[in-house]
Amino acid sequence: MLSADSDARRTRAFAALAALTLLVHALLLGGVDLSPPRPGEPTGAVVQLRTIAAPVPAEPEPPTPPPVAVATPAPPRPARPPARPVAAPVVAPVSRGDDPSARPAPPSEPELNPPPLEIAAAPPLPAASQVAAAEPPAAATPASAPASAVAAAGEGAPPPLYATQLPPPATLRYELRRGRLTGSGDLHWKLEAGRYALRLEGSVVGLNVLTQVSEGVLDAHGLGPVRFTDQRARRAAVAANFEREAGRIRFSGPSTEVPWQPGVQDRLSWMIQLAAVAAADPALLAEGQRITLQVVGARGDASNWSFRSLGKESLTSFGTAVDTVHLLREPRSPYDTRVEVWLDPARHHLPIRATLGTADEDRLELRLRELLPGG
Image (cartoon, rainbow, N blue to C red):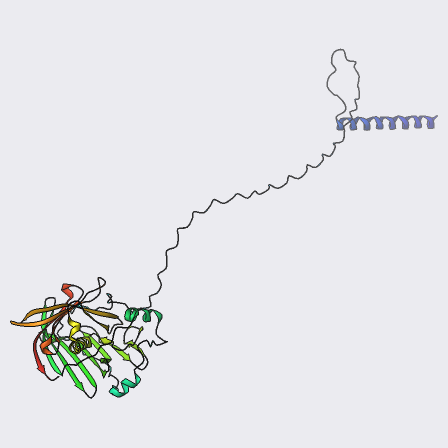
């Protein structure tokens, strides 16, 4: 009996424990309704079991593709203005006429202590026989001369060659004028053993304002300059070297070269050469006739000076009437040199008056006061 009762109690205990376990699970899962019963509903504990569906895993959304970069066309660049032409350097070409840089500057008011004249010694002059043998043909042109210099020198064609009759040695004393300045200018003309020397010295109130020297030889065409130097007040001396055998003319300042040609003159020798040509052939002085000389300065300038005869003209010089022949070299550009010269046939056709310059205020004037024999 006791054994049967023990088993029954054990069974009821297990059943109560199982019911309690189910009740706890139901409370935990929310499946038992503990609210008071509604009217009409049967009383008693009703265990309601709810089925909770397991959440279905959501399918992963496809990755959003990265935005496609659309190339936006760049705004058109504004058109660049055309590039300005770049001036080419300048190499210093030989002018065909007198340009502003080549023409001599007007003498300033003389300074009390002008710089001393420093001129390199001239090379020994060749004898006249050597000059005739070494003289190249008129068309000779040095291969080393720059093309621009060759084209500019002589303006294309060489000047004509003339017979000459040189005046005897003399000293010509001029009155010198330039602008408001008035002074004196002495031109010394010497001949010796087939060579010549010319020297023009200008002074104002006893101060030297101009010194030009031309030295050379005598050849079949008259004067053949070998070296020409030019020194103005407050300016350094410059020189032109006539290298006859090499067929070129070189300068102490500019690096350009000019081809040497027979009959070429410098800025001082042209005065005597013009007189020699006129004396040898007076018919060239008839009105309308021309005498053309190639003239080279010491600053790299070279051009043809064509003197047109304006005919005979009576000129009063320091109270004395003189019968002269008036020649004019007309300028071809605003900065070209205008030259007027009056030759005196009674004095070996030497210039009794001469004016040179580009404007009235810049014009150098020489008026002969006295002619003395001997240089």
